[in-house]
Every structure is written in structure tokens, then in C-alpha cells.
Length: 309
Image 1: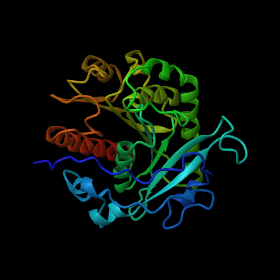
Image 2 (image 1 turned 60 degrees about the horizontal axis):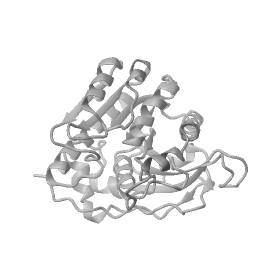
Image 3 (image 1 turned 135 degrees about the vertical axis):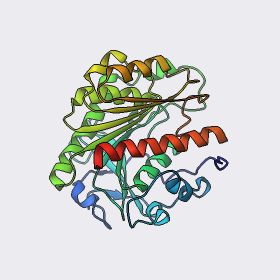
């Protein structure tokens, strides 16, 4: 039976304004030190109330010779600034991001994680990225909203807020992060395969990004209840995508997900009965938590099969 769900404490957050210019990934993926050009946030510890040890071991297998508890302990985080000119973080061209890297069991593979509307500093997003890093990945999470995410306390004005984040600017920031990952993995001489994970708003942007990428950089994607997805783009997806949603989600229609599955090469859709929006990274009940665990295991298998096998 799944354990009771409590709200996990946030992984240490990035500085609200400043970061260091991103440096080469070759040093970032080799423990124990980060590159001189990347600021290291405090060494990350397991979120105590979320029993990460259980989650890391349940229904999944950790790399051989890596203790589950130790793997989850050994994750480092750094605040980065990607793109732009010089050292000005506020030049309008740079993108703030954070990078979580596995230390002991690093598999040399990068994953870009696109957040929901609550942004890259939201605790649920950070904790999910932490869990992915526990299993050997280097997880880059960009600030898609330039420091102005949707606030949970706000009730009205969502469309006006969203209109303030031009699709062209958001896609440009995502592409800058993609270029950084591609360039640094090539320079580091490690795996050139990259993966992508997207939640809600980020799931919709995942589809668009993989179409733009055309298979050049990304080898797999996992889309959790993507919102405002354009099903007409499905035939142009060059990388296989795992689509995950619940049949009670008003923001991600099952019909759209099934259409994406049928029209995209190598795609797979998994629909959870009775689950609503955000159940996989914001479980609100025992039932949500059980299916969230199952969805995480499916994601791990998908990334392993397409990026590591």
C-alpha cells in the first residue's frame, strides 16, 4: 500500500536574481567538484517527509552496485545562467536554470525538465527533478517564465498572465538550454543522447520542442498531462514520446493523448483511471500516490530504454 502523502520540503532554491555563467559539462558530470564557472548550491539531502528511499527502491532498479539510500543522498545542485553576453544575468538574453547532477552513479546523460506554470523554483518540480537525478541523470530545469511564474494564490487573470510570456521567447529559451546541453555533452565526450520531461504547460512545450529539434538532439521524451498540445504536430515528432495522463483531467483530454499516440512514430500513451491533473508530481491522496509511483517507474524504464540501453 502506498505511504501517506505529505508535502515535501523544497530542495534548496536558486538565488532569486543571480547565478553564475554556465561552464563546461565535462567537469559538471565528474564528481566531486562542479566546474569553477557554476555556483554550487548547498549539498542536497533527501526530502525527509517524502521518504525518498522508499520511492527510489519501489518498483524500479537502481544501477548495479549503487545503494538506493546513498544514490539519493549523493545529488548536487548548481544555479546556472545560460546564454546572453558577458556576466550580466539581466541582459534579456540569458536564461536562469538549475542543474541537479547525480554524483556517485552518474550515467553521463542529460535530461531537460520543463515545468508547469508554477515555475522552476516550485518545490514539487524541484523534488521530482531531484528524484530523477537520484537515478543517475543530470537534470537541467530552466526558468521558463523569467522570474514571473503563475502564483497559486491567484484566482483570475491566467490568460493575461500567459499572454505576457510570448511563445517565441519561451521557445527561444528552451532552445538555448538545448544548445547548451548538446554542445556540452559533445565537448565532454560522453553520451550524446538527451531526454526531455514536461509537465502540464511544459508538456505542451515538450511536443513543440521535439518537433523543432527534429531528432538532432533529443532521443526520447516523457509528457505528463501536457496542456494545449497541438495534435497536428504528432507526425513530425522524431523522438519517441511517452504520454501520461489521467482520465479525469480537464486540462489534458484523453482524446488528444490517444491521437498523439496513434499519429506519432514510437509514441505510447498511458491513461490512469480516476486520476486528475498533476497527479504524478503533486499527488494529493493515497490513490494518487500509488499511480504516481507507477508513472515514475514507467518514465524510468522509458528513459533507460531510449537513452541508456
